[in-house]
Every structure is written in C-alpha cells, then in structure tokens.
Length: 134
Image 1: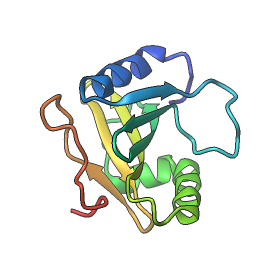
Image 2: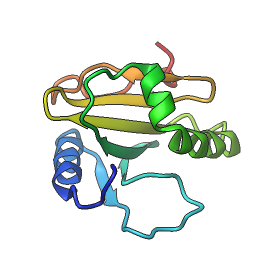
Image 3: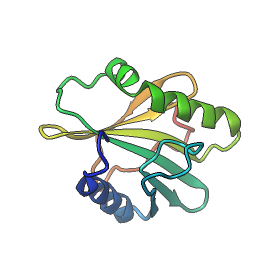
Image 4: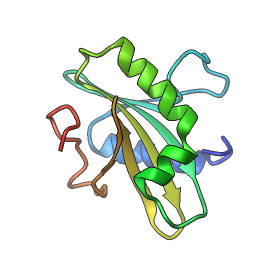
C-alpha cells in the first residue's frame, strides 16, 4: 500500500480472511524492519501462515511482470525470508493489489517467480496444498 491511511483495505482483507478461519495479526506501522514486508499476518491451523502486503494502485494492467517491477523491494525481502526457511511449506508470501475497478488481485511470491492466485471469493479462498505449485 502506498499509504498506511488505507486502513479500510486492510479491514476488508482481514474480514475476508476471518471468514475463512484465519487468525489475523495486523502489523503496526514502524514494525521491525528485518521482518517480512507485510501489513497482515494470517495463520490457520495446523501450519499455514500467510504474509500479506496490500497495495492500492490506479493503473489497470496487472500482469505478473508489472507486479515484479512495481513491488521489486517487497519481492526481494520475501525471497530472502523464504530462503532462510525453505522447509516451512505452510508459509506463503503474498502481494494483494487493489484497484477500484477490479477489486483485489492476489499474487504469491515464490523462490523462483511470482504467480497469480485465482480470483478470491469466500467459496474458493484457499491456496493449493501443493506448496504453491499449480
């Protein structure tokens, strides 16, 4: 998110995650700079954890290449975190892009690439159980 003033977006994401049985921790402004670049941390039993960064943008084209260019710093930090804990299969690093026309589009940062997560609805919310591989 370009500004932490968009708490409304964070609250919307929090509500969507809670509908899907996640426990949410909202990361405060000025949180430890060595931590992943997340606005929210969502946990679900037994071992799933999602670090979620939210960005509000006005441009319409949202390709993986655009996300890699626009969110390069966050992607680098997420990949460093994933490299430190390669055996933790339940950890997912995500960037959620919000546009007024399209709503949320979600992308998962993987060690080698970035992939789009299918459109979220309360019915089809979960990530694949195969470690993020389609």
